[in-house]
Image (cartoon, one colour):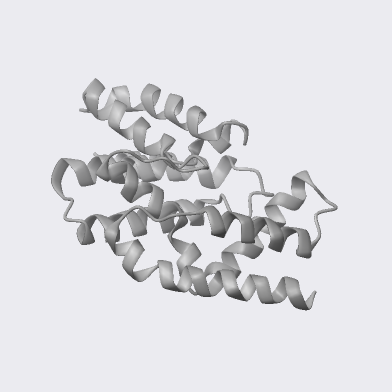
Length: 193
């Protein structure tokens, strides 16, 4: 079942997402799926819950197919509509939507599964990929605000990192230290700017 859903959604993302989505791209969806699988294992999640997590990961930014505004809610609607064709209960689809909505900023996940997807979505903040992904997000933001300077963007990132919290034990332990290092790096960049 998952392979069918994955192929269908990824094919649409690859063909239909606007080219200015440098960050919210099919590559980001694959990255989040990979991190969901990794974090689920670290947090002891398997079976049906892992399946639901993987489906939520694939749909978490699918709302961008319609537009960026309120894309999580749009992604929920898409998922709820399309997942009726599969062997999933109404409760399963509700859980998937809860996970998708948990990626909305500011993140407020309630369940273990919501926490895993929320962390998978922003796991990069505490990794070596922070700068690379940040550049992609900056290019994407410039689509809406062409005058956004790198210094202004760095200030946005500092505020975001300062307010962000991880939710899973794994990310709190292994991603938070590097996230703090990335924050210090940004603060230095701003000071030198």
